[in-house]
Length: 164
Image 1 (cartoon, one colour):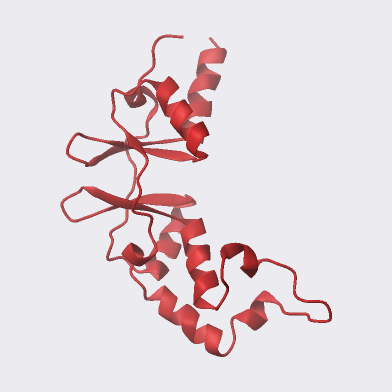
Image 2: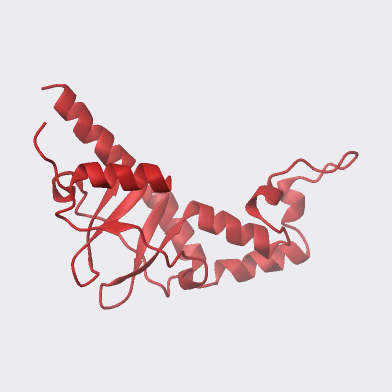
C-alpha cells in the first residue's frame, strides 16, 4: 500500500452547520443527512467546534433535570414506571422546547480533533483510535474545513486496497 495521506481518503463535500443554527435545525439536518455529527463553522468558514447526536442527547438530559446522559437512560426506581414520554411532559416539555431553540454554539464541543490534508493516514488512524473518535476534520492552515475523514471512509479505502 502506498503512503496514503489524509487528502487521499477524506470526503471533500463535508457539510457544516453554523454556530447560530438552532438545535431544532441541527436535529433536522441529522435526520435528513443521516450523519451523527457535523463541524461547526463561522461565517468566515473557520471551524469553531463540532456537534454530535451525543451532544444533543447530553443537552436533553440536562434540560430535563438529569445530571448526566447516563442518568437519562437508567432504569426507573423499583416500583416506578417512568417512561421517556412521561419525562417530556409538564416542566420537562418547556425545557425541551427551550432546548430546541438553543443555538448550536451552546451545546457544541469547542475541542476540535483535526489534521491537515498532508497528514499520513497512519497518524489519522492513531488519532482516531487513541481519542476514540469516529471523525477527524481536515483543516487548511487557516482553520477552514477542506474535508472530513470518518471511520467509514478509512474502512472503504482499506477494502479497496485489500481487493487489489
